[in-house]
Image 1 (cartoon, rainbow, N blue to C red):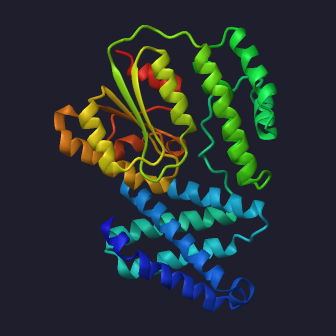
Image 2: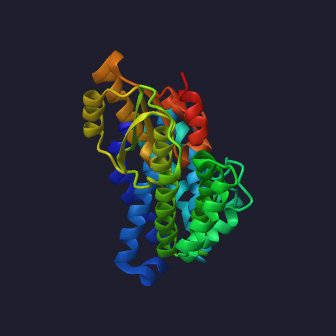
Image 3: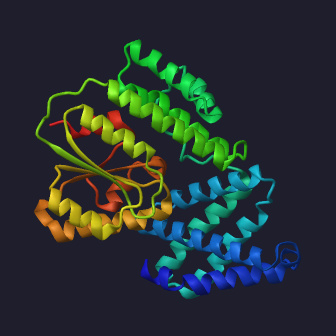
Length: 339
């Protein structure tokens, strides 16, 4: 959607100027700082809209809109202006984009505006693995920063017959998704969310050290968050699972520049590449990375799996990205990667 990218600055200016003209109280209440924040928000809308159009899946943008509306409501911010901003974007793009693209964009924006007013449930968190009964308790301990109690709970689970894969998929993953939802609803702070993540990282290190490792199976797997994705906890658990199951693993972590990713894949020659996408606006980066890998490496490109929070909303997203498959969690990924 190069047309949409080229219109981003002008579209943002139109929406922001029109909102402030229609609602003079905005300037009085928020000043220039508020106008700058509004411009940034419209930029995010356009990033997510572009991703939805590229993948031919409007649900990606509607889910983003529903998520954002929940965030605003949790902070007692009215969502009327959010819905209005979508309508104004549609008006502008109808005038400036070629007809097929304009029609598609307007339809998605109309659905999003209606969804915001209708208070829908976003589906980003809608496909969760079955949680162990202790998952809620673990989440509370992690949020409280109680390392020792959280570790004790994990030790009991491991000693009861569950392995590292069970721990990550059925305890940690549901608990941390719940932490994310609590932040979305303004029931916890960013600091508390970071504390829960830090506790979980420490817990996972100890669990990893207690795991029984399979013999090396002669296969290599590379793990990376696409450029712009700062959320790497889930990917870390995935990489650990593959290593425990006998794979040689390289974990690149968060926000890996596309050019460096391609270079590393070419140098290391993995059998499998797992890419993490946490937000819809990272879809363009994922698509670019996969296209560059295919273009530059051709038959030497590895099997490419995608996963991450935003893929939960569209289980067919991987097809539009040019990947070879999608995995919901570590157990699913290991099953698909089995020879």
